[in-house]
Structures are given as C-alpha cells and as structure tokens.
Length: 415
Image (cartoon, rainbow, N blue to C red):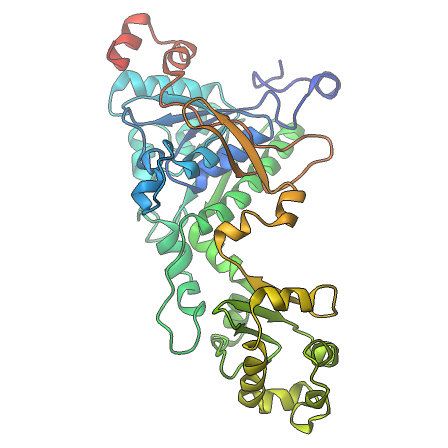
C-alpha cells in the first residue's frame, strides 16, 4: 500500500497494476449527469467508485424510456446505467448524523471525492473541500457546478440547460436566422463537462504522485459552454460582437449548408475550402455549366450570389433521394454527411466497426447495448460493459468499511 492507503510504490505498481487507476478509490456524492459520468469514466479506468444516493434513489435512476414518451418496456434507465456503470452503491439519508459520519469516513479513505452538491450543503455535512483537505491535504476534490465556486451565482442551482446552454450564449447562437432558440437534448453539456473534470482529476493524481499533495478541481457548466462554443466565444471577446447567425437561404458559403432531398430528408455539405471543392462538386452533380458560370467562379462571387446558388443546388439535390445521393457521393472528392436519425446512427456500420457501442449484461434488463467510453487505450481495454449498481446494493458492506457499528447500520438501513 502507498502512503495514501491505495497507491503502490512505483516499481511494485508497474508490476501489479492491471488498469490505469487500479488502487484508486473515488467517493461520488452527485446526481444526474455531469459528475456521475465523470465517475463512470474513472471506473472504466479501473478506479473503485462508491456512489452515494438518497434512500429512494435519485430521479435519474428512475427515468425509464416510457417516461420520455418512448413506447418500450425497458425496465431500467439506460442513460443512468451508462453514467453509473461499474460503481458500488450506498443509499443513506445524509440528514442523519450516523450517515454523515459514514460518508466522512469513506471520504477519509478515498483518493478522490467527486461531487456536484452546492457549497452550502457540502458545508452543512462537513464535506466542503476546505474542511476535508484541512485534515487530509493529499485528498483530491472534484467539484462540478453550474457557475463555479466563486462569484455571485456560486450557490445557484443549475442544469446544463441553464448554465451551459442558455447562459453561455450557445442557445441564442445555435439557430438559423429567424428561428426561435433551440431546445437542448439532455446531457450534452454534462458529458462535455465530465471529460474536462476527468482530465483535471487525472492531472491532480499525476501531481500528487510527485509531491503527495492533492488539490481541488473546479469545473463549471458555464465555462464549458463558453469553451465548447470557443470559436464564436473567442471572436466575441476580441470584437464585442457575435458572429452572424447561419442563414441557409443565403449562407456565406453555399457549399457549407444543409439541403433537402426528394424524400424529405436532408444532407449537409461541408466544404469549407470552397474554391478547392467547387469543381469536384460540379462534377459530382453533373453540372459543368455551374463551374463555367461567372457568378460562381470563386468564393467571393459565390458569396455575392449566394441566394441564386443555393436555389440551384437545392433544386438539383431535391431531384434524388438521400440514399441515391449517398451512392453518387460515395468515393468522390466532396465532404458531406447525411443527416441521419438517431436510430440510424446507432446502426452506422462505421460506428459499429470502430467500437462506439458495447454490450451490457444487466441482472434485470438482460443484454443490451450502450455507448462505450469515448476513448481507446492500446494497453487497457475501455469497454464500459459493466452495469450500474442496484440501489444501495452494497450499503451494508460500505457502512461496515466506514466503521459503523452493527446497531448503527441496522438503524440507518431500516433493518
């Protein structure tokens, strides 16, 4: 055992380690998506992750497909399973003093404490970073929040819908001219934030390997939103203005635009270097006359005559179905993609071949597929095939590890 109860000495670690985070313990006090999905990635990397939930289980756990309007009797919440795979579950009421002692004791045995609980609640339970690290400076604390740990909104509750999407300017920016603000699909900003949080936690572990001192990793959804929107955000910071919204009827580059097909489907042309691709596109469309047309001879002229060219391209592309255009574009020197439905995306041969999906064997739901971890390692298989834990399935064992007496365990668990 290393100096923190988990890390092995360097030589022994290299000989015995079976996964990148083998021997690392994480205690996760978090709900919904961002922080728990970071915990799932840490579990994929080999860490032992203890998830703490309220006795009835968080809402996300119970968000089965039928509640979202999907006509399927899948008995679990697939999204909860993806974001909590491979964890141990402790279900306790943190308002009770023995539960607080138990959680504090488990954190006292951990390398990483991961949370998205608001600061005033962490302080109430003696789990704020300052209190924890005052007695254990080697502890690494990962805090996921809506707006950061400082500033007037540090105590403000949020979701990625509010902090990442609306408050970052992304909701306004991500719409065509004249269109209302677009609704965000669940978990998009959360999963982006999780990647940043894991990056910080891994870096903190690396630094602690050198000097034995932990630190606080602070990731906010607002910051992640502005970072993900970085191309536009950087321009707004430098100029004080928002980049113009996309207008598909009159885009700056008609070769970078979405077009409808004969079967009411859509395809997306993405030829950002339009001069390079203008002649190949004309060849694919069998329209050499367009390449010879002075109105469209270069990027500037195509911009000046954008509405005319969009009208012509739309008329051409509406002559065939999406499947027909896929065959025509196959192997040609054009950059494009079909606008597919989500079920179609889950059957994409390229996604399947590259290991985007993985199989899960669940004791209740049976065998099903989910999204594999978003990276591959040549020396550690990142499969993400383990199911999420049943609610409180290891509560008794974890409370014993925390040092509670049999009587206290029985009282907490209602036995």
